Length: 185
Image (cartoon, rainbow, N blue to C red; front, top):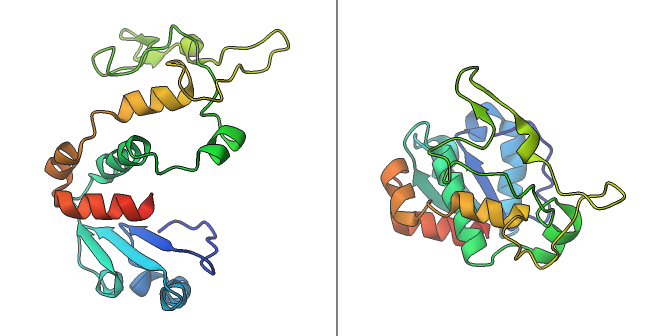
């Protein structure tokens, strides 16, 4: 559980990953339980079945250290099933911004991003820049279809995170992954 303030008064879903607020943050847990009383669904993803997991609507076991694979699968699932709020993403995030066409991701370059200098073990990030218009403002594709927009690069990067792959890595049953991804989406 992070130390960020989360307004739980109108939450539909509460995701706790790798934390145990019932034991470690009892005041936070009080508000989580109040949100649950109002109909919120509590999802706990943790290697241990904790006091918080005992209160969960959905508990998903996960192997230690595999949370990034779990989240990568969630990103793929949400994008693939169009469970994101497109209007918000286009207006208030960088997903419509166009990236330099010379940028390449790990799927294109055997596990590294473009600009990697093997000798110095550092990145030259000049290909990681946004395309700019004449006024120096990032160019955008509001349809999110351009292969160089952040959204498409994100989708491409996480495309390999299938339910089967994520289940094999995390140890979380496929059906449980899909159920959680649907609720989060």
